[in-house]
Image 1 (cartoon, rainbow over the protein chains, first blue to last red):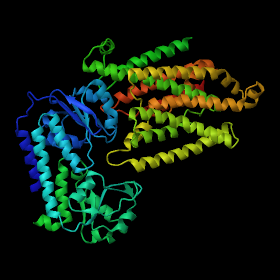
Image 2 (cartoon, rainbow over the protein chains, first blue to last red; image 1 turned 120 degrees about the vertical axis):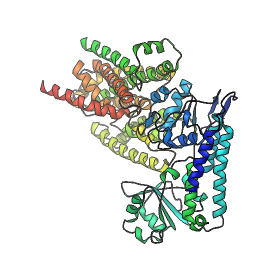
Image 3 (tube, chains in turn green, blue; image 1 turned 135 degrees about the vertical axis):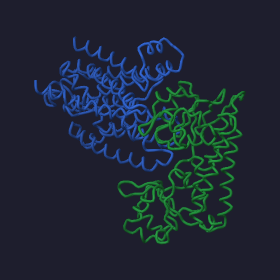
Length: 299
Length: 326
């Protein structure tokens, strides 16, 4: 609870500062696709595609500048009234342009980058692509968006506070034995499971929270057979979703014999915190650390 | 003559409607302003984005109509369609590689090139297999096509499962496979127009011999047509046409099947009028379907192939029923 308030205060603190937009020098940045994008003045009308990018702009206290979001954005509540520019069926160039944005922030997920970079470049609307394969990239994204939007110091402050919180977690869990962990992020109709993998921010979050991967990453497939989980018998089993979803999963034949289930170390964890690469991922890391090392959270 | 006039007018009307359709509908004034070179954002959207896309949709539809006519003519089968001989599977594999594998070339270049190579390569492979097995007739080609399509489909599924992760979603592949016209730059649109004109010429060159083949392979042979050779050549030509369409439009369902039939009702079965008529019908269908795809469910855009099948299917059944009754 304390941690959540911590981020809340951070956002409030950010919002309280006067946005320093006047007389800012032109900024040129390189995005995740190594494209050089220039801004003569800090953008005032931002279309953020994907929840993570919306959350980053909002965490910088710039929620007021967001003029368009996509259908899967659920947070923060005060930007949810903005017009939608896309959803599961992809993104509409028409709808984005109708918002007359001076910055579009996308992530290569779904068809976003593919569908929007080319038209926006042709129409002269600045568009940047952010990648988030690690927590370090998420922190870099926060600083980058801060620089572009003329609030570089605020971006620095938000990112370094989040980094300080992660450093504290590292101190707390450092030296403690890392429990082997499998995080299930989705269930496929045919019974196969999707798991969080190394080389993703979710995997990075598991390691930063003091866990280790319970499955050797063999091969390239993200989907695995439930048998592999039963074989690996991890110390901790995480299910990104609801408690009922977890109960349904571990109620299946064989799962009750897992050490993690018998030892009450099977937990449902928040999808918003661990499957959206934004500032809230740090909340997720702190919560994971508590699950991995109960003694730490008691301290 | 009346049929041609009607087709031409329908195409012109379809293009104007499609250029106006979108998340925000454009008035004729907006369109004229955009064509006159107004420089506000909305005019630039129309001129740089919507109008090239409408024209590209028309050309893709025309190519699908041409491809369908060739394949139906070669196989003398009303169910033949342009993707019959593995070109859909090959194009989809090529596109999947371009979308998911990090390549040195930019995706805007790699995607159409690999889709083209896949579509054409698959058909060449099918012809090669039926040659080696000594069955260069319609049945042999079809069987080889089914086998190659199955193999390519499985390869594509594996590439999709192996290379997708949290950052590279499969939806991008799915959406490509369901069809969607890429918006070309004006110069690329010029290239597409030239290629389409060349494809039309190529198909017109085949028209007379397709009519002869329509009499049956034995009869065509008696008329002096080297049937096996012609079938292979016509299929190769048809697959080039389809590969160009696929490179710019993804896999658009149904148009290649329906357009030649509708054209046949309008201008009759002889291929010299049928070839250009199929192109016109295909163009009209895809221009309108693309407009629906962009405007029906704002802000989303429906994959084009879904629109052509969902909206075009019942329309085609209706036409078919009326046709059979008379």
